[in-house]
Image (tube, rainbow, N blue to C red; front, side):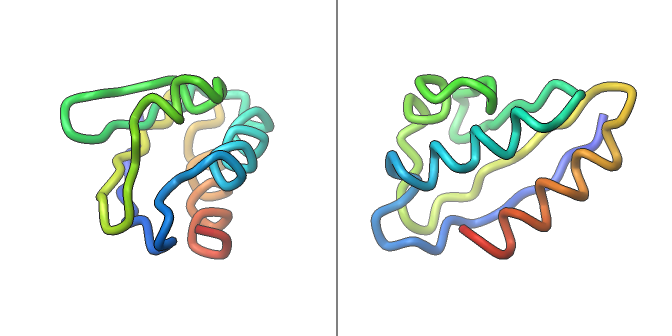
Length: 85
C-alpha cells in the first residue's frame, strides 16, 4: 500500500466539479484508491463517497492506493492533485 497526503487549497473545498474530476482520474487506476479525512473514508472512484467526506478548504486528506500497480497509480494521482487541486 502506498499513502500520501494533500491539503485542499480551493476556497470552496472539494466541491462537485473538482471531486468529479478526481473520481475520473481515480477511475484510470487499476489499484483500489481510498480517501480518508477526519475518521471518515471513501472509495475515490465513487463520487458520492468523495462528496460524503465533506472536504473543506485547508483540510488534509490521506490517499491510500493498494494494488498491483499501486506505485504508478499513486504517482499519477499525486501529480494530478498537485496540478489541479
